[in-house]
Length: 241
Image (cartoon, rainbow, N blue to C red; front, side, top):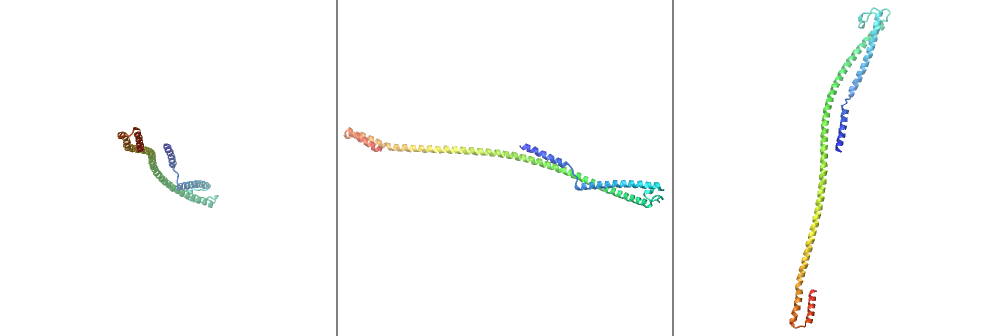
């Protein structure tokens, strides 16, 4: 039964270790990742807008005499091109370029922060592995102590049973010895009573002898034999009663 419980405990511990080995990002990391994705999306949008503006400027330059540095300078527009529209497009292109640079800087900064967080996460993972190892050692030690405690309890139960059996045996022997002692005392008492009775009987025997002696003494005194026998019988009967 204990081995089955120990195997179940090992399976449960392995399941928790597998669950703990999965590294989940923190809330701050999730927020930063989402923000980076938003910035990357905006960057792609700005890149598309920048391409569109470049195409518009290229089209405008083809319609008039525009040099290669049209992207950084505002050339005199041809007669067929609206001057305000060209200026607005160039300014918008510059603004988009500035926003793109800012977004790139933000993405770089957030990427560095993400790298730092990942490094901290790796350090935390190493610490977690060390703690897991300590937990495993502690659990093994606890399991060993639990097994020893179980064995000790089993030994104590066996000792209790042995002590109980010995107590019953001692009680039985004492009862038997007490019974034997009682019988011996009764036997001794009976023997003493028999000896006392025998002694009393012996004390009465001389009285009987006197009656018998009297039976023999009487003839010498000249009494008739029949009368003497009658007196002897009466004398014997009197002393016996």
